[in-house]
Amino acid sequence: MEKVIIFSAPSGSGKTTLVKYAISAFSNLAFSVSCTTRAPRGEEIHELDYYFISPEEFKTKISANEFVEFEEVYKDKFYGTLKAEVEKNWQKNKVVIFDVDVKGGVALKKYFKDKALSIFIKPPSVEELQKRLTARGTDDAETVKTRVEKASEELMFEKQFDKVVINDNLDHAKAEIFKIISNFIEQ
Image (cartoon, rainbow, N blue to C red; front, side, top):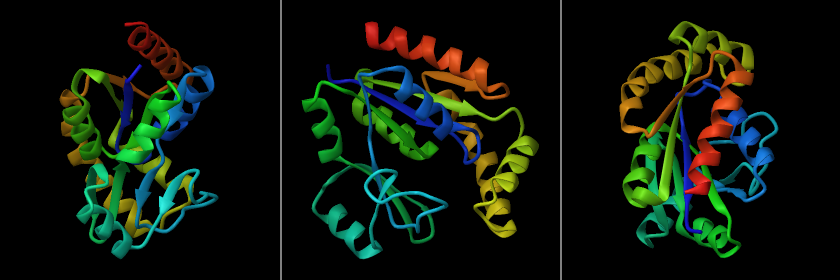
C-alpha cells in the first residue's frame, strides 16, 4: 500500500497536534521525519521530530538528489523530505504521514499525485493564530510577527489541498481528521 497523507498549515494552526492524534488513532501510519537546518525547539529530539543537520549537509543531500521535495522556508532555513524515509516506511506496509509547511505540502502532492491525500489545517483566524504562537512561548516577538505575516500568504494555498479542516475546536477537528483518513485508507 504505497500511500501518503500530507498535513500542511501555517505555523501555530495545530497541525502537529493533529498529526500526533492521527498516528495514535491509526496503527498503519508512520511519521515521515523531515530534515531541517533550523535549531531544535523546546523538547524536539534529533531523528524523532526532525533530522537536524547543517546547511552544508543539507546542500550535499540536494546535490545527491536525496529529497522528494525541499524548500528554503526562511533565509538559510531549509526543510526537506528524504526519499529514503518514504521508502523505509513503505517497505513496512505503512501509510506515510507528513507534517510539512504549505509549499512542501503542495510539492509533495504534485510528486505523489493520487497516492497522496493532502490536508490543509486552517486556523479560525489570523488573530487566533497570533495568540497561539505567542502562548506557545517557543519564539520571540519578532519571530511570531514573521510567522503571522507568512501565515497570511500561506492561507492562499488552501485550495490546492484535497481537504481543508478548520481547527477552531480540537475535538471536532480530530473527528473530521479521523473520517477523512479512514475514507482514504479504505480506498
